[in-house]
Amino acid sequence: MFHIFSLDFLLVAANREVMTPRDRVLGALVALIWGINFVAIHIGLQHFPPLLLAALRFGLIALPTVLLVPRPQVPVRWLIGYGLGFGTVQFVFLFIAMDIGMPAGLASLVLQASAPFTVLLGALLLRERPTVRQGAGIGLAVLGLAAIAVSRAESAALLPVLLTLVGALGWAFGNLCARLAAPPDPLHLTLWMTVVPPVPLLGLSLVLEGPAADWAALRAAFTPSGVPGLVALVYLVLLATVLASGIWTALMRRYPAGVVAPYSLLVPVVGIGAAAAALGERPTIVELAAGVVIIGGVLLGTPRVPRRPRAGAAPAGSGLWRLPQRSP
Image (cartoon, rainbow, N blue to C red; front, top):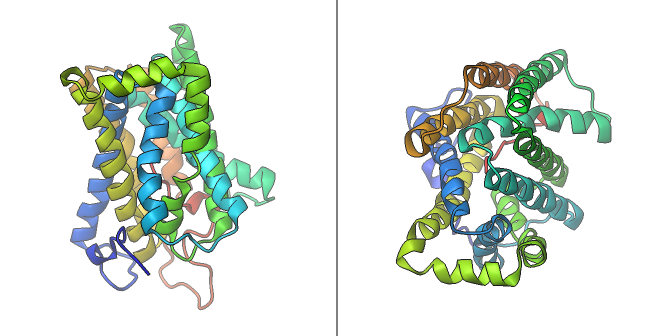
């Protein structure tokens, strides 16, 4: 089997409950890449229409995936559902939200709603009963999101927040499909997921944004003024998707999910900091306080690592809240 995208060589061979110093650095590196990713999206949207940017992001990964990576042995319906939820719905609404004014830093925070949304969808669609910790975590996260919504409604900027929440809901639906797929090689599923979104995204772009706008953006990308947009696109494809997702998937395979998942909580911290440094964004005190509440809710819902797993017990990460959370 061809493992060109496998990053297992970066990691220790045995499952552990305590990460090695090297793997802690890798976890922090992923959070750094994904946090800066939102700044890259902001820059990319200044040069490409939002739906075209999303189509390019996945299309540039899909082609080498089809040629080089074996298709995962999972039911096609779950692969398609994963691609439509995580790849299409999430990025249609996230990119449109950021295009009409959603701050990059705030977007990195609001997307954390995908974790409690995953639990809620699991309860509604799969009849899975949330634990008390998960219920409390959902309550905290909803409280924080409500505070942001009220704050934004006062400044007539609520629509971008709502669109971002719909994107987080799409991410949560993709999480359910990825879980139900139960892939033997999660990285192959992640890569093959990218084969699904390009066609619907490109179709939506041609209909809603128009061939003329798409063609003009593609031509401008290869001019001196288009270099920042091209660099942002390369960042989204190579660093945020291939490298960071590959490292994250490999970490999730080597450690219980409860050990790895808290590193994803660094993403909005990096996102807000990077947006402040690079774009001059300044979140309000209410938004920062709400962010702490949201992250606290997600952290509360993250499973504790059992000290001595029972023989034959399901591994950490089998529950809905325990799904590997991949950032945009």
